[in-house]
Image 1: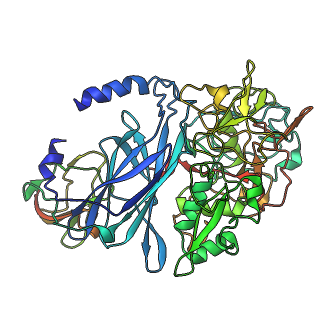
Image 2: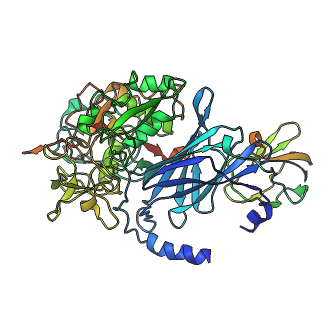
Image 3: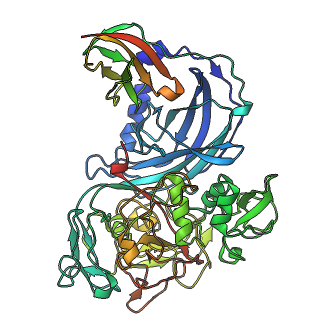
Length: 117
Length: 478
């Protein structure tokens, strides 16, 4: 259904008739979020379905992030192209345990995995 | 999508603590979900009207620039955006993580999700409509306007790269002294792609900005705080239809601003002028706003690309591609978000806010554009940018001044506490495109695309006719 709705809008949107049109207002909006008023009920982590991977394995993650990386226990980092939700386990220098990290400072994902050569 | 569901064992937090202010672009906080030990996933619902994407022709499209601030005990600080995703928009974050750009996949309504620290602060989100100006050749100058750029023989000059332009050899002007010296390779010339704000900065935009910076930054921006109920940007700015005023003081001494154009003491009513373009912006104030927003000013070469596009140069043309203009004087729904004009246009005539009659101040951003307007009746540029001719002067980095040529295209870092980028100098600008009081008499028309009448104007003070808008280079996005 969502695809059908999308195609419906797409049909109009792609025509380009709106290039010289505009709406009310001024092309600006803002909003605020007061976290102090939010009642946190539970927490959860993103987790991967398995713990052992090998170079070239395709891991499906829910989102695209800019700063996804594979980090060895010694701190060596391997950048991961995260332009899509799919990414491939890069080839590390050696087999062993690594942290697969998404935005490590926020701990969205920091999971220890074993990468085989 | 399946993977999304697989991983989405989230507990949804009902979010009560947000307030929304929005018009054409609409921005609302949706669900806020705890995520991991110290982060939250914030859903933002974003939409805007009459979006377009000219994929089949020149790739021109519109988009929204989004950035975030947060408040601590020390005031407002910049919040980087580096973890974001959306199923509805193609998301490009800036290379410096100062914000992100949203381009619709299908239509301009959808959700994005930001990952932010869960530290109990108040977040502020701001969204600005942009228009994409693709890479490509364009013509500079029209062979006739005051101090127009030109080639060696006074013909329009084709800009076909970002390479340096040697004065008098590769670039000239009808007034050679209006170019200081060779234009360096790193001075943005408009050949490369960039996004430009669709509208001039509005009065609520400046009011909102002032409300989300710290007291020292407010003082730096304004010089001093006005009295409560008085004009913020300049004494009696309201006489030229600027309604940004000091509303009240916070306990920490910082000021709360709002719009009260009708001067009844009740702020931000429907007719308080929030969506009017913001005049009385000095060059430095424009730079400060754009620094805070993660954008940058445009150059005067980019201004001509933004107006003329890939089209040929029409002598003394305005931004809508014609040399004939009708002044928007008789207005409907004045000072509201629906403000528009009533004049009927002759053939090949566009609309603009200019001249000596009518309102002695700026009109609404996008006052002429509606659902079914065309380029002339909306006063739009080649790409769909509004009010590049008339309403308020666009303040741009100039090649007529030594300091202007030092500009290397740096973008704001989102924070005012670091000062402005090093290549953003003062004594470096030129005003382009005219304003609400720009007259046309004889051959004089300082709101023409190629007109550089004030190239030697040294003052960069706030005037009742000065405003501006920002851009972001495509190379700044990833």
